[in-house]
Image (tube, rainbow, N blue to C red; front, top):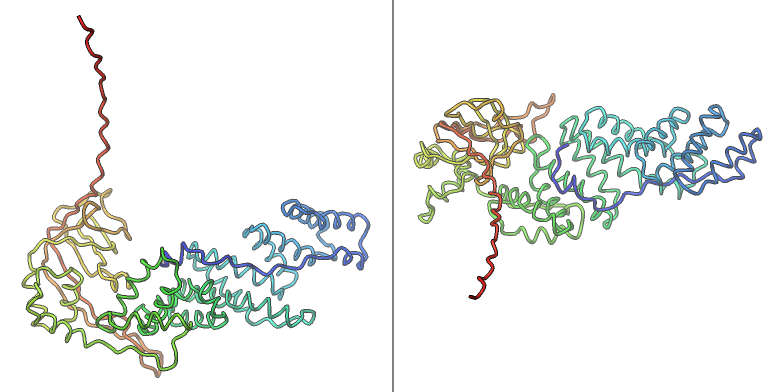
Length: 455
């Protein structure tokens, strides 16, 4: 799953898995074991070094595969691998436990947790599905009779948020069902205390905000703004600069300007979820805002940012769009954005945040000279401005693209358009300015002249 850098790089807390209680030595004495098994068991379970203990337990299970203490030894082995932080062997051991004890809560928990980690690293659909299936199973398990209420509360308190997070990640990554992901992320956050939501719950709060911001039936910019504000409030300083542009973008998109945003940031410090009745006043329609802006005598059309020009072409009335296009037509411009598709003759780029979110091109640049195969940019490459690699072209034509409604379920209507209104801008005579490499420093050889001897 492609997450914001904050979510993928930041470690807010170290999530501690619930440790499996170690078997006590007297447990084996209460079970009739042959002397050689008993001695091997004692040798394995009394090791103090975790690596040596894991190796000894594995040897015991290999030597006595049908031992009557197999489940107990596997549980102890799982706890040992947890202590070592060995996720591969944690998953392998948990799988072995589930073969002999299918409803072992700890093994389900560990399996789901490790699969969730793998899902986050690889975005592999099957791995994400496996993590979700294990999590669904874990949420449905009942308290074993031998487990105390306090111990069950401890186990589920650690596991249930992770289960909801794993299911949400599967909805987000594998199924692209952002509405379902929102429900699971909210279910996770509801299980945290306020302090926990500021720490281990913060990366998924960010993903919840991101899900609410994406086009489709689950889009809700008011909710997105609240949760982006919440993350901004408690993110380490180094990450605020990554979050703030998105927060301001969606707030301005919904409200029209930034007034009032600081008050929402302050309000979001006090509670994970927005209070009942929380709302943000919507901005005038895009067309109304555009017309008001263009009647401002201080606005110079040629000086508008590329994203502002595109917004006018996408949402402005025909007269306002044509007024701006008259200034743009035939002019050369850089096109900073992410490559969505590229060939030797055409490069399609997503420039605005909406286009990047939807992974659709809003600028199509027809190249003046075909590129060699080695020079065709890869999908996902980002063109910037010089001295970075820069894509340029001349404005040629534009087409407004109306919003498309989502296909509703039977008997329902979509909550939001599947795609927002947009514009596609065509450019001709495109070319790439390669990145300008910094010149290597020139080292001058200094020659020392000795003074002439006096005559």
